[in-house]
Length: 301
Image 1 (cartoon, rainbow, N blue to C red):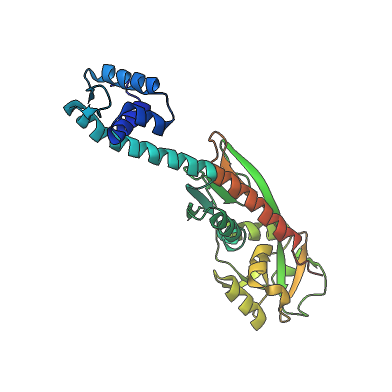
Image 2 (image 1 turned 90 degrees about the vertical axis):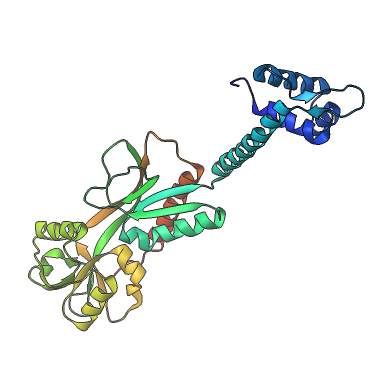
């Protein structure tokens, strides 16, 4: 049975349907002698005849052994066709992709990636998961967004540098860049003490500012609402302000900080694993989306 090939089964099925070796050969694009050789090889592998050959113009008849082989052969041919289709779809960019992400990327860059992937490959299966920022691991993921490099056997591309900016009411701080030290003991609305918020507060403290946190909340919109209400200022990453459309709000003033806290956004993938066409395309789209975001950035005065 190890010598049975799919082409033998395909030829056998064609003969059973057409009735003669000659018509099967014409259908498959083979010579009649090639069809005869394939059936002979199949019968040697099986140890018995699969067709009775009456000779002359009369059609061949399938043997009981041939009926058993053909019944199972049809199933194998169906599965082989499905495998061929799956491989072709994989090469064309369809299939499944697993992406790890975090909130800032999920709000802006990732939606652009998903929209374009689904537009180009409507049948693709996209799976998303939020990754613990303190211990990011690729695992079985195809791609992982993270603000910084991760350890392990991975490759990466840098997407952009994201600055943190000061948001306050107009007039609360002088126009233009604000020295970080002005935030020392100043009332501030902030995120809960997540990984990213702890990093920000350590960075501010390293530059001489320990703001007085008067309210912590997990929502960017809520933080901006509290700033508008006058309870305190806030320091948020640029992507958060972009998604909240804070730039056009005349009730808010946005200032660069000096020195400026910033984080680097990267996209990672396993170094020792061949990327699928879908994953490779997702990387290209993410780079394009990040470049478009950076080019469209509104720079505070």
